[in-house]
Length: 594
Image 1 (cartoon, rainbow, N blue to C red):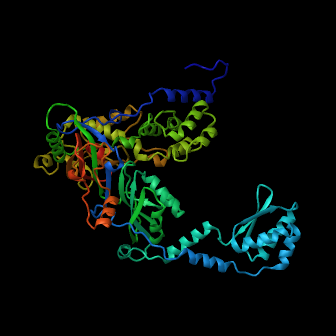
Image 2: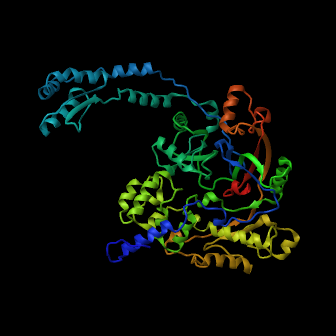
C-alpha cells in the first residue's frame, strides 16, 4: 500500500480510508460461482446438457399454489365502461360558473390592481384558465388582494404570489381539464357497475381485499411499490405470500386493508406489466409464507448434450428427467439468494456476525462492474473520499437501501435479510453430507416428522424414513445439530474459518441473534411433465401466459393449451425443452435444473 507524498500522521480516519481501499481491490470484480456458495454436489448419474434459460420472460412462468392446494391462475380481468358522459360533466361545470359577484370587493381590487384586471378575473371565475399580473409592492396590500379575491368571486379563484414577483389567479373549483378528468374518474368509480363475475365472487365487505397479481418481468418489491403508489398508501400495506424471480411471468396472491374492489379494478388501465384480478373480500391479511409452493413452467432453448455424440437428444433427456422424478434434487439455496455482485451478500453477512459492521457496509459500497448501474457514480465518489459520506449519498439511488443509510454502520447493515447471513453455511454442510453419505440416510440423521429428531437404525431398516425426510439445520439458537460426529465437525470447521461458533449464536444486537431452522436435504418435485419443441426462430414463444389464455378465451370462446403445440410452431433445427413441475416454499427451480 503506497502512501500520499505528503507527510502526515496515520490517524484513525486515514487507516480506515486505507482499509477501505484494500477492501475495494482485494478481490476480482467478477460474479460468484456455485462453488463459492457451497453448491458442489449432484444426485444420480444424469446426462449433462446445456441450454438457454429465460431468453424471453415468457420462458419462465410461475403460478403460486395456495394453502388449499389451488394453483392460482388469472380467471378474468374486469374492465368497466364509463357511464357518466363528459358532456354531462361540462354542463355541470357551466352551472357551477353561475354565481353572484361582490361588486364592492371588486372595486377595491380594481383600486389595487387596475380596472383592466377586472374583466380578466371575471373570465377566470366563469370559464377557468389563469391570469397573471404584477403584484403590489407592499406586503399588506398583497394580503388584502388575496382576501378580496375570495370575497369578490365567492371562493372561485385561487390567488398566489409567484417567484417571478407576480400574482397568479386560477379557477379553484377544478374547472381545468386535469381536474375535470379527475372528477370524471371519481364519479365513474362511484357509478360504474363491476363485472358480474367479480360481483359473484367478491363476498361481503370485510377488512381486507385479496386479489391476484399478474406481473411480467417485475420484481415483487417493485410491483408492491407501484400498486401502493397508485393507491397513495405505503408499500408495506400491500402484502404477498412469497417472493419469486424478477425475469418471468408471475401470478401470486396479495392483500391490502381498507380498499374497495372498485378502486383496485380501476388501477388496471394505469398499469404496464401488472394486472390485478380475481378479487375477494376476506377477514384476514395475506402474510409471508401463506402458500403451499409454486408451479413452474419453464422453456429451455437451444438444448444440446454437453458430451456431444450422436445419441438422440430426446432419449438422453428423457432418461435425465425420469431420474429427476425418482431421485429428486439437493435442496440448495440457489445463486439468486446470494446476489450476483462481486461482493456477495453472504460475505457481508459474515462480517455482521463477526461484529465488523463498518467493513460490511464498506463492502456494500465497493466499486464493482456488476453493481446497480445507477449506483456507480455514488460508489466511485465514496472510493475517492470515504470520509465524505454526504456527497456519495446524494448520488445513491433510493432503491439501494443498505447503501443509502447514513454513516451508522449498524443501522445500514440491518437492511440485509437475516437469513442471508447463514444460508451459505447450510449449503456447504449439506454438500459435505452428500459427499460422505450420498443418497443414503444414516443413523443420527434428523427427520422433521413433527419436530426434528435423530433417526434410529431401526427406522432406517424398516424403511419408515427415506432421504426425503432428512433435514439439516441452519445455524441458530433453537436448533439441534446432527449427532453424527463427522457432520457436527463440518459445522464447527466451516464456521471456525470465519471466526464463528455454531454454539455461540447469541448476538448482543437482538435482531442478529438467529434462531435457526431445519431444511430438507433432498426434494422430490411434484407433477413433473415435459415436452419437446423443434423451432427455427430464436425468439419463438413456447408458453402462453395466463393473460394470453384469457384474451384468447374472450376472442374465440375456446381456452387454448398452456404449451404451444408443435403445429403452432414453425419447425426448425433448434431443440426446446418445456418443463413443468411443482415445488414447495423456499425451493428453487434453478436447483432442480442443475
